[in-house]
Image (cartoon, rainbow, N blue to C red; front, top):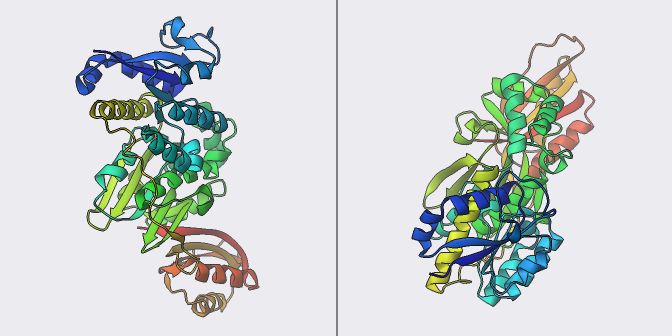
Length: 428
C-alpha cells in the first residue's frame, strides 16, 4: 500500500504534537484509512535547533515552497500561524491539487470563504477543526452533527487565557494584573496579551463558529468585541452575591434572517453549565430548534489536544481520498443574513452605579428606566461607609441594547449619578 505523504508547515507546539501522534499511532491510523500516513517533509525556521522530539534531519527544510511544490506531497498540514504567508502557501497548494489541514483561526476568520471556494473549485479538502477550541470537535459537529437542525444560538468560552484569569480572580480574589502576569509566566498568555484579553482571539473564533452555525458569511468586522481588562474584583464579588459568574463569552444569535455576534464579559447564572467551566478549559453551548440545548467541553489549547484535532482532520481527508469525494464538503455560506440592529439585540443587563446617598435618588434612577422602557428585575444597595455616596446594583429584565444605551446616556447627564462603574450583559 502506497502511503499518503504529508507536508507539515511548522514544528512548534502543535506541529510537534502532530508528529508525535502520527508516528506513535501509525497502526491505528493505517487501520482507519487503509494505508500508512507518513510525514514526508517538515518546514522549520532553523534546521539546527534542538527539539523535544527526534526527527529525521533529511525531512527538515527552511523553504516552504519546497514542500508546497513537491509533487509527491498529498496533504499540506499548516500549523505555522500568521496570515499573509500562510494564505499564499495554502492557495498555491490548492492550485496544485493538494488537500489542506490548518489550525489557523486568524486565516480562516479573515479569508475562510476565499480559501474554501478555491478548494471547491479544485476538488480539494480544506479542514480546520483545530482552529477553534483545541481538542473539542465543535466544527465537525456544527457541519455534520447539526446538518438537519437550525441553530439559533452559539455561546462559548473560546479563549483559555481569559477564562484562566477570570477563574483565578473569582476563586482566589486575585487582582487582574497579578493573574495576567502569572498567566504569562505559565505560558498561557503572550508577552503582548492584547489579542486574548481584549477579546480579539475569541472574536476570530466566533466568526468561524457563527459562519458555520448559521451557514452565513460572517466577517470579523461583524463581531463586536470587548475584553476583560476593565473587569474588577468588585464586579466579580457582586456577581457572586447575586448568583452569577463573570465569563468572557462569545455569543452568536439568529432570529429569522438576522444575526448578532459579540464577545464580551458576561454575567451568567451559576446554575448554567457553562458557568462551571474553569481554568484554561473551553466550552461551546449550542441551541438548536430541534435538538434543544447541547454543550461541548474540553481542552481549548495545548500540544496534544490541538494536534488530535489536526490529525482527525488528516484522517478525514485521507478517507475522502479513498472514496473519491474530496472537495464536496466545503461549507460555503448560502444564507443571506443581516446584522441585528441595536433595537433587535436584547438581553438582561447588570449595572453598578456610584450615586449620591440622599433621599429621592433611587426614584430618579427608576424614572430614567421607566422613560427608556426598561423594566427593573432587582435592586441591591450595599451598606456605604461614605455617607455622601453609595453604590446601587441593578439587574434589568430583558431589554434592547438601544434602550440600555438611552438609559446610560440619561445617567450621564443625571447629577445624582456620579459614575457608571460597570455594565454587563446577563445570561442564563
